[in-house]
Length: 605
Image 1 (cartoon, rainbow, N blue to C red):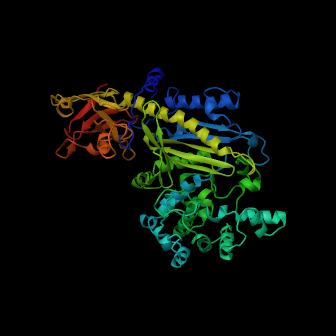
Image 2: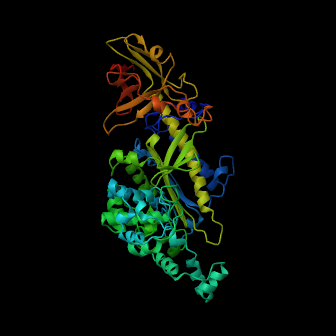
Image 3: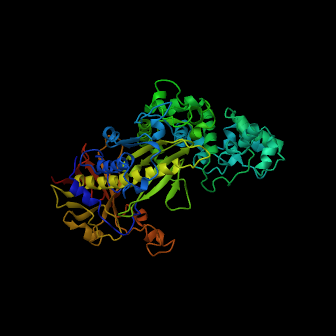
């Protein structure tokens, strides 16, 4: 339902000094209006894209455009998606054809939602998704030596400084925890040594000496590196080429981004599924989700070539070897519309059981920075809202390789996300700016959309959930308000202003007359179940134990205590802290019940 802009605008101006450290569930029910003329999300999208227009079309250098300076040479596409507003949200897109695309000799000269880009390392997410579908839980945690026989052979004769492949699993590969090399032979200087040797017509030994390298090659190492550069190598040949290379870290020690790890994960998925690469992605992901414009190999003929974003030489930046073992790491191609289908399919558990999706979309390891966590293969950005300090986790997979890059971002708190693809050719000898430009563009959209999603969710909660609920049989009432809690150091949320149960003042009896907060604990059950579950939260919240003035261990209880005190005050198996709200098809509450008192109250109109 549309809301008045002045009322919603006020919701975005609330400023509180502390961060929210509540349950890892949404503060409010999912926002459903992302696109109406009065939606805060549409307004934020329009504002963000008008800033693009001001810079790219009008050349305006203003305070608003400062964050995107220097991005004018990039061809890019953005698209929003939502499970709550699926058809309309997909219309919120922005596309920009850079100078190279406008002047392209091959492919398209304009871009839209059906333009085909290379998606670089976003491929890793699709490879892991295919693995989620193809591998059962036993195989995910099975040693590589039991899946790929070549690694068992290598491991049987391993030295003490070689990787122990019997301790490395597909889950380790997907979670960046294998500890193995980043790229293996693919970035070996040997390749440029060979190239220079041919160009200069001198021996590889002389070229190596010029590069400051030891010309006394180990013949075995030379043979292995050469074999590893063969993109058509078999799994056994790959095992022979890389299996004995010393690990960078011991497995399961620290997240370390390994392209090679995802190449091996691709081999695992192929072996378990019994399908070739092209068939793996088509059968397991693309066809079931209707991703009809996604490819394992670059299209070189009509009608797809005309829709392809080819920003550099056709052979160098577009047409890679067919079925190369590198494809699972970064070789797939797609469109914004198809990535949006992927995002919806992932969040909606279209191809996986819902519990498996929930378990997959969780951190596996931490980085040294408090702002980021790592999943399989998620790069989890802990976005901090400027006005409240609340943290929203964004599950992403970025891609950046050669002339192309992209990202898929899933935001569970809002049942929404966005996709991004980009391209710009840059000679290896010149400055490499595309990657940094791409991140600037993502920052610009994220800074606009994520606060708007939060404000829209809050506004809809006020409209649809807040109000007075009464019983027609006993003296029981409940009044739900917004941002009126008396719990200190907390961010905006719904809260209970008054609760009378069978004539008893429950806030005075159980909560020392405080106005506790109401936080979403289960935003949605299966489709068709119109129930949203809330949990009372009554503890102060701080972003860190230092902010709470506590030590590292006392802070567990005194900086973020609700996780340990939820579901209390139980009566006959039901908790006084649990409220179940029944909503209609538009998400408006009709009645609410408490698990402890077992009373059902009807919302007053």
